Amino acid sequence: MLSLFACSTTLTAGSQTLPVKTLPAVSRGWKTDRSPTLMPIKAILTDIEGTTSAVSFVFDVLFPFARTHLPDFVRQHAEQPQVAAQLQAVRTQSAEPDADVERVIAILLEWIAEDRKATPLKALQGMVWEQGYNTGQLKGHVYPDAVDALKHWHQQGYRLFVYSSGSIQAQQLIFGCSEAGDLSSLFSGYFDTTSGPKREAQSYQTIANATGFAAEEILFLSDIVEELDAAKAAGMPTCGLARDGGVLAGHRYVDSFTLIDPASF
Image (cartoon, rainbow, N blue to C red):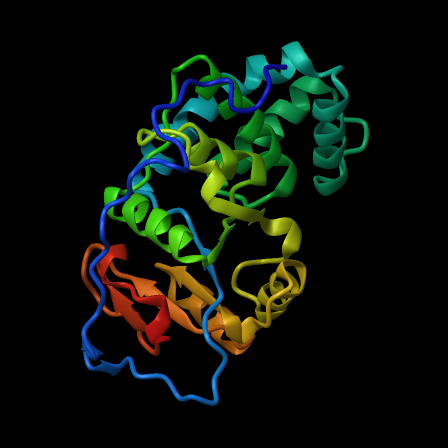
């Protein structure tokens, strides 16, 4: 198995960053002034798909790549411990304890077709993507405005975290082997569905506990209202990303990372 982040990079954490525009006092009708009794934002937790990165990258690039290469990958690496563990998890979740490798592959392809958020599938997809990134067949997509803002916030001292339905390994590859270079040094941690479903408030409390920050100190960014609702229910301030327009009801929202000022939440 190739090691993580073998791909070449063009940027480092110490590279020059661009200034990031901030919101005026009012944005899209939502007041941005903050009560002095509330905790200041100290950390930012961001979604990936539709937020830092294009949905099309996931559906038009990553998923087809995994679907094409996963069968041969599983056949070639089925005996390796980290792969074997995920194959066993597939057998358990599908209630087919005696399924052979070919049957497990068939189940995985069914899950891909159903867009099933199954942890063993995500883990195996991550391994396939790792191989693609390491060979240069894949480069992670991150919006330029997200790159600039994340670097700016990191310089300002905010702790940055990722929470995505994709596996932690897949998250690390998107940012570590991105079109903008290696962005992995910007982040203090990654969370996936092993921390809980993204539409349940308890998941966000679990993440807050893991980071060491109070939920009220963590700004959550996403393009999905139900995820924003769950984070808000856990006590996190929220900001929606409506990149293609539309309304994210019940939350402040913008169409670009450059319009987010964490200090205003």
